[in-house]
Image (cartoon, rainbow, N blue to C red):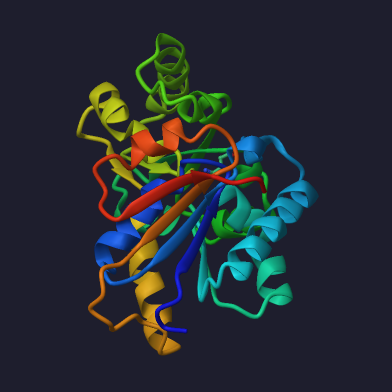
Length: 260
Ligand code: DGL
C-alpha cells in the first residue's frame, strides 16, 4: 500500500501547480494525475455537476490504486469534498483559497481573491469568509481565464487583457494581499506580479497542500519509505500537448491520453 500512488485530479492542467509542490516535498512518492480538461472549466458548472465529475475522477484514481487523493482544484474542493469524504474510504486532501494567512498578515485589512464563480459561490467559501469579519475580502471571478490557460497560451493578448481588467478591479480597493483561489492561476504568477508590483503580496495554497499531504500520509503510516525511483503517470482526456508542456522539465513522468 505504501508504494501505491498519490492520486490527483483537476479540471485540467491547473492542479499541476499543486502536483509540483507535492512531488518536490515528497520525492519518494509515486503519483497519478487526472487532467479532466474535457470538462473544463468546472467553475461555471452546478454543484451537482461538480460532485458527479469529482466522483468519476475519484473512482478512476481508486481503480488505479491511489492511497490518498489530492483534490487539486479549489472548485471541486469547495463544492464536493464533504460528499467525497462521506462516500469513499480513502483520505482526501483539498485545496481552499489561502484566506487565513492573507487575513492574518494584511495591514490594510483588505485582501483580494481571484477565483472561479463555483468557488466564490460555494457555501464552504462563504462560511470561511464569515470567520474574518474584521477583514474586507474583495472577490473577483476570473471568468474566461481557465479555458485560455488550458489552451497553453499564457501570453496571448486576450488572456492579458482579461487578467488586467480583473486585477484593476481589485487594485482600486487598496488591497495588500492577493489570494490566488484557483489552481490554474499560479501559472499566471509572474504576469500578475509584473502588473500589480511587489507591494501587493501574492499567495496561493500549493505549499500548504504539500505539507498537509505529508502530514496525513505520515499519520496513516502511508509514506513511501523505499528508495526506488518514483514514477509519475499523468493522464489527459483531451490533447496531451499542453500537459506535456507544463511538465517538460519534470523527471520520471509519463503523459498519456486516456478516455474518462
Ligand atoms: N483549477 C480549478 C480550481 O482550482 C478549476 C478551474 C475551472 O475548471 O473552472 O478552481
